[in-house]
Length: 376
Image 1 (tube, one colour):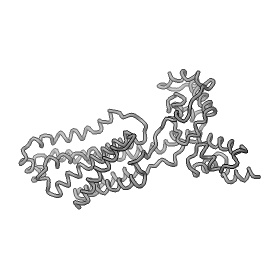
Image 2: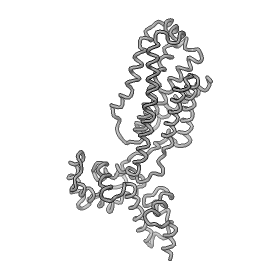
Image 3: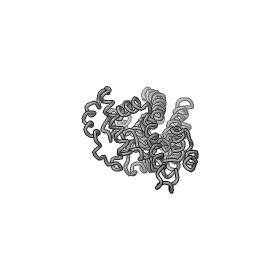
């Protein structure tokens, strides 16, 4: 069993190190690296107990015992920043207040003499029974609160994808979902089995599995697995569009207020113009935030305008434009030498399955049926 603990400790340090060395790190990468570090430390503390080395390192043993209070909050924050392209909010540090408070309960332990510290550990924390009980209850509540909260946040994000992304096929939710499930299993062991060997054994297995799945399945240590909004201005240069630029300033003052009919009309007019003139939908990675940035409006306002004026969500609007662009290009004689799939990719689709599904949705025909019609 001690080799399992040791493997988990070494792997947690290694994975955190890999994440810290990763190029173009996101906030989520820092949070995940911190999770590996703060998961490896309690494992190391228990390893000292399991191998009887706590008699030589009593302070290191106690130091890691409160750190499980950071695991569930870090998972929640990792999910939050992995699914949201936002700057770090200092208020999120309040999630670690319980960890700080519980750690302070044990602060005087470190001021005891070495012999007293060893004696306290030998006698199962004698003199710290109340603090130990508070720590245990806090750990229970941490998992019970944060794990369902994280799952709800992920489910809500997944449901809202069609309002944020124009292509959803390559967004991998398994990594985040499996993290939540794995953490839930660990907390079930903590609450119901209450055997330190099984608890820290499950933590070790969880770390090993995350390392394997993250490297071999979703490559989380090489790139972000849930893509957030990107700036596509490097790919699309905005020229002056008549009646577009003259109304930009008019919409800016409404960014923080409810939209009235006149503002909705202005934004929709500008949206229609840029879709015709610049065809941003040909970028397969186009997101609502990208399009909102091109229009210089708030993403929530743009989503509201799209929903109210077209009776479509962002995903359907953009993919309908891609299908229309495809039909236009497929009808040109100079494009006959290209396959339908090649043309579809040029129009902004990033997979054949996505193209086929949306083609059928908007034309009531399959691409092959359409091709037969052209030949006929």
